[in-house]
Length: 200
Image 1 (tube, rainbow, N blue to C red):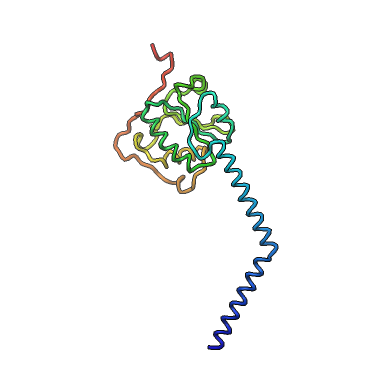
Image 2 (image 1 turned 120 degrees about the horizontal axis):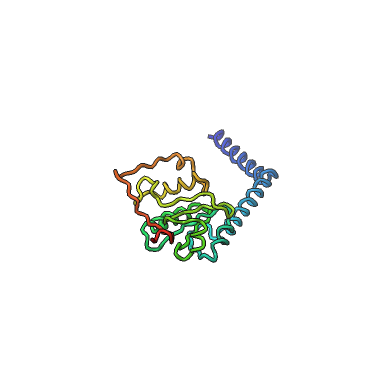
């Protein structure tokens, strides 16, 4: 009917007027500019962190270790030995976590090729994860015998542990998640770095 057509025209006019008002609203334009600036700053910060190795899991040498742990606010270093099964398991989990947690840099250091820092940081059990804030070690995880199933624990279990200690940022959902052993017996299957005085 004619009245329906008139209402429909009126709606179109109102929508056009609203769009025009929104497009020319100085407050909205200011908000858009602020939002764009914030997004640009976040992108630049992410690119800077990416250049430092964030978002990946990289091996460093003993010579690069200090520069690596002091170059980012949060760093997690995995001291490992190539032949140890549990170190390979740690690699698998840390690679996944590193890709999810851009806020922290993840690195690994071959314990056999880093005698100075193995001694300095008293690394005796492998795998050992040491978490640094502004270059200072504040938490270490030695072996994985505290997890629900040493040989087959979930990535989220390690992620939760690192989040609880403040090395990465995690969600409340993960923080509240419970993990339980599926088997009846827990076995320590990680290896040890023995000090010279144990060789007698």
